[in-house]
Each structure stands twice: as C-alpha cells, then as structure tokens.
Image (tube, rainbow over all chains, first blue to last red; front, side):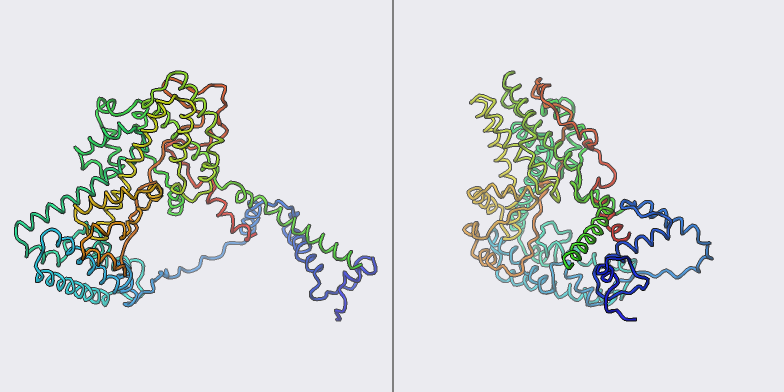
Length: 313
Length: 280
C-alpha cells in the first residue's frame, strides 16, 4: 500500500466524494481531526445506542456505566486477601531527626537554644541578686550535663524504635518520644510555662539564700501578672469586638475582670461568665442590644473549618 | 486551493473544539463564576452588624437628636453597599477573614458619616471615643510585644515597663494591623538596647539560631457581629426610611448567625467535579 497522497486531498483536488480505496497518510492534520473529533465520538455513541449530544450529562454517563455493570453476571467472590498495612519508612536516623525537629530544627540548634535560655536567665538574675561566679559556672556546667543526658536518652530511645512501623506502632512509639521531649520543648521554644523545672534551675535555686529566693519569686510573680494582664486585655478586645463596647463600658468591664482574673483565660470562658452575670449587673454594664447579643452563642466561622470538617467526614 | 484547505481546516478545528468546550460548560461554569456566593452574603451581614454596632455606640456616646439620628441612619442604609462593595468583594476572594479588615473600614466610613450628620461638639465626642479605642489597641499590641521581648532578651519586670514606654514612643498603626492579622510585631533589639544590661546586649546581638516562634495572636479569630440583610438599621428609636430599598435578594439563602450550612457551599463542590472533566 502506498501513501503518497492522503485520500481527502484527492477528494479536494478532484472535488468528488471519497473514493472506494481508503488510504491515509501519516501526519495529515485534517484527517486526524476527522478521526478524533467526529468519527470516533459517533462510533462510540452508536455503540451505546445513544445519539451524541453536546450536553450529555455526567449522570447519564454514570447510569449507562451502571447499566452495563448490571448486565455482567455475578462472578464468584474473590478469596480475601491479607490486609496490607501502610508502613512508615523510619529508621534510627530518621527518628533522631524527627525528635530534634520538634525541638527547634537540629541537634545543634537544640543545644544552642538551651544554652541561650540559661544565659538569658542568668543575665536577668544578675540584675536582681548578683549570683557568684562559682554559681554561674555550676549552672552552665549543669546545662551541659543536661544536654548530654538528653542526647543519651534520645539514643537509647531511638535504639528501641521500630523500623518501618505500622500506623499503630508509630503512634505508640511517638507517645514515648513525646514524653521525652515535652519538658525540653518549652525550653527550646523559650516558653516560660515549662511543665517541669529543668535540672539547671533546680541547682541554681538550691544555692540561693532565703532573701534571694524571695526576691526572685516576687519578680517572677510580677512578670506573670504582666502576662496575665495582657492576656485579659486580649479577651476584652474580643468581647469589645463582639458586643461593640464603648470606652466607658470597656473600662468598667476591665475593672470587673481584675477582681476575677481566673475567669478571663479566653473568650469562650469569658463569654460564658458574661452570660451568667446577674441581670442587674448586665443592665448596669451593657445596653439592651448588647444583652440580646450576649444571649447568642459564639460562632467561630473559621473559613477553613468547613473544609476540614468535610475532609474528616 | 491552499487557502481553501487552510480555511476548511481552521473551521473544522474550530467547530470540533467549540463542541468539546460547550459540552464541558455545565461543569466549568461554577468554577468561572463567584466561588462562593455565601461568602458575599456573610461579608454583607458582618458589615451590617458592625455598622449597627457603631450606630449603637453613637447613640450611647454622642446622644444625637432625632433629626441627626434619622439623617445618620438613612445615610448608613443608603450608602453602606456602594461604599463597602470593595470590602465585600475582597472577602469573597480572600483565603480567610483575617486578611480583610472589616472593622477599620467600617470605622472610617462611620466617622465620615458622623462628620456629615452630627454637629461639631458631637463629632468631637466621637473622635475622643475613637482615640480611646486606638489607645486600648495600642496597650494590647505593646503588651504582646513586651512579652515577646521578655522571652527573647530575658527582661526583668522593671525592664518590661521601661520597654513598654519605649515602644509607646515608637508605636505605629501598622503594628495593630499586624496584630489584627494574627501576628505579634517583633521588638527589634536596637529599639530597646538602651534599657538592657551589657550582658543582655551581648546576647541580644547574637542572632544565631534563635528559636523565635511567631507569637500568634487571636487577632482575627472571633466572629464579627452579624445583622440580617432584611433588617433595617436602627439608631435609638429611629429606623432607616422605608423608602430606601434593602438589599434582600440574597437574604433568604443566607446562613443565619450561629448556623452553618452543611458542605462547603460551592467552594469544594466544583473541585470534586474537576476529575470528572477528564474522566469523561
């Protein structure tokens, strides 16, 4: 078979219909378009006895598919296969990396952060009680010891880590990892509310006189109060935004918040507290419109929340 | 002859592609249109809620007379939509609410309306109210920055107060904007270095490997007040004139405050349909 000239070109040249002899030349654009966009869809539509329309809906396509499925006789059920569990590709090195990633990045970053934290502490203490040079050195040595101890603990823990664990194994082991890193995490991220007093701090405190300890304790209380006051302001701002408080109302409510500091940790709690105010107090503090608003629950319409909810479902 | 062939080829290609694209139109349409009309309604409700709050505050703080109140409430009702159309659009297109500053826009617009509707003494009273708001915001933002600095530089309580004063001198409105978007502005070492001890300065200058997590605030996490599109603005006992038409076209389909419709309301659904385009 020779493909010197495409058939449609013959047709165009002679201005007659298709000849009886079909031929096709590779690379003929017009023929390609005919085949892919006109002939193939028509052929497919004829197969399904459904004339092709431009607006064939997805639903009807699915229905046709289901109909075809229904025509196929039921096959005998396949024997059950063993459930293949997904496994995490984890080894000792990766576990170690993951642990230190939780503590600020790498092993070196963690060490620097801890040393920095101790130096910050000592610098602050210097301005209050002037500790001796020997005590400073002792504390710095303790932190080095603590770092080494932690690194050893990590090595021991990682040596027991399951290699390529399943989801369950991973979660179980991660709980152990979490227990180990939790006390250090707050230190690494410069958080003052560490759940456990670090060893270097214990060493420092044991070396202080009663007066020095009292001075530091008062200082800590002051700083915590400062933080709590700002946190209360934050809640008050949220209440202000939600209820549209005026400056006078805000001052009154701020005074009220000072008398009950524990009841303003966050907006949810504060909102409940405000809802439970006696009617008399409410009418003193708020306008009727605000009292009506206060009856409504807080609607947290975080834009991402519906998507997260849907994905969870 | 060649030209004729080219024209025929072009026409065939055009009609083939046109036919193919038309068949996809049903699926593509939601993607091309506004992604979520409910977001627009939501934004309008928030805007109206905030305006109503401002009107309530004006009523309490400025105590306008009957004529002024009517003028102000009518102005708000007739102008809120054209004046804040870009804000509503911005929210419809935004990824989340924190990037759209509803409060400031409404606050500024209300100040303009008050200037036009109230007398000078009442405008002054409202101006003082706005100043108090700004001071309150400043206190909060600076407080957050000082706490952040305390963790970063190891400040004592006395130093914290000194840093507060220094930051008050440097305060900029952009800090509030940062806070509102959910981030605490960073306290720069150079701003506060003069209240630091020598050893604190040495450590403060050493910036290697500091783990500073952005101290995220709750600046935008709380819902704004909401008002239905079918309810008229009120100021004291005055309601907006019934001659002014309300924008109630979307009011029926709008989610009420405190309720949420199931699903994503047009955001995710088109995304689900995308694979079907290619699967056909």
